[in-house]
Image (cartoon, rainbow, N blue to C red; front, side):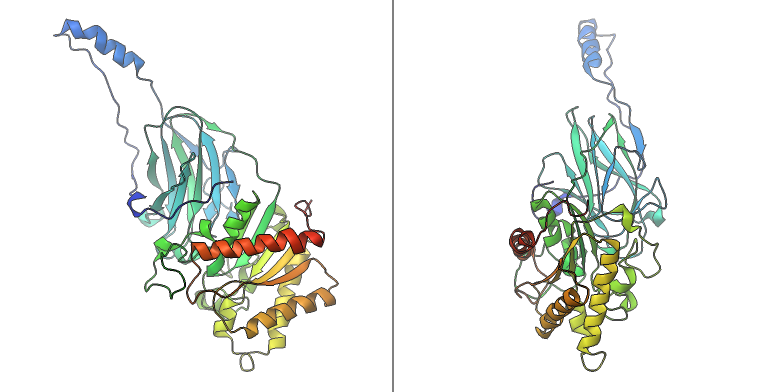
Length: 400
C-alpha cells in the first residue's frame, strides 16, 4: 500500500482541461538555410511520436477498492470516502475523465502518481453532470508509472463517476488486491472530516472547509496501510447508528444505509458477497450521543438492542469476521461508552459470539480529530488487534 502522505499543498489544486485539443511539437527544416537542414531533420526524427488513447473504466486492468456502484459499467460511481481506483501505465502523460453529480458541496479527489508523497488534489467541476477531462501530468519519462485516484470527501459533497483515463502509452495490469480486508462503518471521524486542519485539540473552524476533509488520513485508512490491507470505508458525516436521529440528511442513520451503495435510504442495495472482510470496525455513537436523549427519546436498553441488532445484521453477512465496536476519540457524554460496552457484552452472551469486542478510545478533542489524533487511534487499534484479537484466535484469513 502507499506511504502516509503529507498534508495538502493548496498550490497543487489543479484546474480542469475541458477539451481534448492536442498540441504537437513539429521540427521543420528551413530550406533557405541548407546548413541547418540535416540538423533539423535529425531533431525531428529523434522526437518520439505518441498517440493518445482513451481507456474506459470497464477495462480489466483497473483495480478498484471500496464500495462502488457499477450500474453504469463505463462510469462506476464513487460515493463513499476513500474509494479508489489503482492502475499502471506507460507513456509520457496522464489525463482522467470524471463526472461530478452536483449533489452536495465541493467534491475533492487526490491523484497519487508514482512514488510522489504529495498528491495532486483536484476540486471537481460540476459541468451539469457531463464529463470533464483533468490534465494530471505531462512530460513524464516513458516508463511504467503507477497511479491512484482516491475520493477525499464523503457524500456530503456528493459522488462522482470515473469515466476513463487518457494516456499516450499502454494500460498495464495493476497490482493484485491484498488478501487482508477491513471494513469500517462510521461517521465524520472515520471519514476524515477536517483532518487536515492545522490546530489540534480545538473546536473546528467555521464554515464547510471541505478542502480539509481527507479520508486517506483517517484512522481507518492508516490502519489498513499498517497491515497492507484493503479497506471498505462506509462512513458519512453526521450519521448516527439509529435512523431518524443524528445530523445526516433528514436523520438518515447507518441502520438505513449500511447495506447500500450510497449513504441514502433509497440508494441501490449492496451485494455483500462482493467483499468479505476479516475485520469489521463499527465506530458509531458520537452523533447518537448528541441527538438522542436517553430517558426521553428512548431508553438505554432500547439503544443497546438496536446496536446488538446492527451487529447481528452484519454477522449474518460475514459469519467468520472479527468485530470491534469502537467509540472514537472525540468528546461526548461518557455514559455512552458504557452503553456501547454493555451492548457488546450482552451481544456476546446472547448470541454466543466470542468474535465481537469493544474498544473505547481516549477522548482527546472537542473538534474532529486531526492527523496526529487519527494516528493515535490507528495505533491503539493496531495494539488491540495484535494483542487482544490475535490472542483470541484472529488471523488475516478468517474470511476465507
